[in-house]
Image: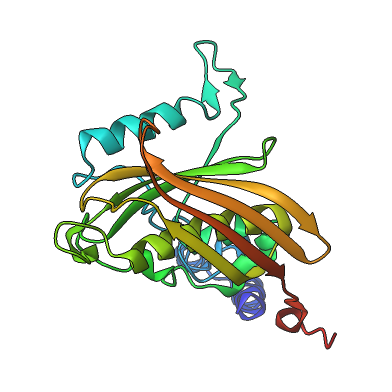
Length: 257
């Protein structure tokens, strides 16, 4: 298209010389062609990734969050990187992980794998449109301590025994949070084993902390420990251990190995 416009300019310029076109007509034609150039999008502005560069972060506070949920969130946000009065960034020990792309691009080597996941795709815990109906949570990681904490508020659709959270929903959150930490430390992984001990029933709608920490890494195996407590950590609801195995994603990049 650019070549055609350039040739057209050359033809018009030649016509002006040969036929003696008046200056006014040539200026009008030149202005018309300039407007055509403006409709051509520069290569630098054409998105190379067809999905939104700013997908929705489901781990941001919303109207369904209880005061207790917001208080716990604010506590850990204060421990993350912050900007001081001089505009300088103060390094904090914790980092908040956004919910989009299943946080996979924050895993070791995950920046490449995340490009294969559409912005619309997300863990099913984020798929319900009604805020507060199911899983409301936010994950913070501490890379130095090799640990993470999740602030979790259970919604009405997670009921098991009357007035209490279903054990399967608790297991889902434990798998999600321990898997997030394992992936953050070891790259792409899959759950190999999950052992859960339920210590006390969890009231529906309550806010809890899901603490996860690295136990050890043995070659392709990553062992994680986990406990679920009240926000003041005075009550233990659940304890768990998890084993994750690193997986190869070479086939996504054309590798046969």
